[in-house]
Image (cartoon, rainbow, N blue to C red; front, top):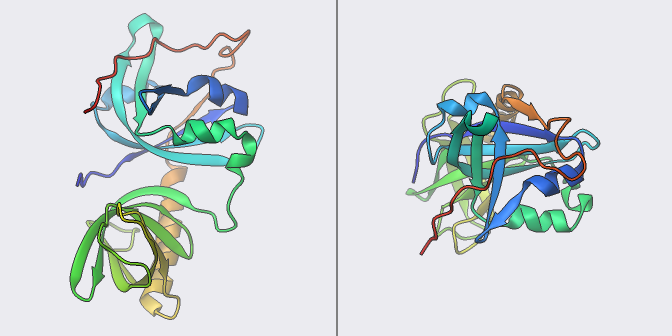
Length: 234
């Protein structure tokens, strides 16, 4: 499992319709062109967590993907094509803005390697979002719902807490998608979960944000380069 943390990026559309025009489903994957000169420092396959938001709404959605290819000024375009591994976001777009209505407990996207230990047995996974009361982890195959465990962030640096204390597994899919809640009666978990949530919030405030160009999507014309070549996966 790749231990590198993903880069946090933001893109703000003016309207929901603009987002629909800029997401492209190719071979079951979704492509999006992130126009920003800073992408020149990224390498192919660099991991990213992208937050999409709208000027006319408070709603936002977060996706995890990777840099597929970069453009360094070709045709006046500088940025990178970001590849998301499936078409889930595109399917949500078909449902309209109602699909982006926030949850009661706000979850914030993140990307951190974690260890979940069950009776001395370690399970490695990647925390992909966090709320005040819990978190979602992927890649931790073999866990079972109802299990009591302890969790820590691997390689955490202040202000990110390392030890997260006791958690309870409330959901565990066969593919390793796990939902945990922090055990509030555990002092370590209670304090660490608050620090974790705050640290992730602060990380997002430092993330670069790109605004959708005003001149784009005028008269149905989308300002972006041609779609890159996609290698067929077997």
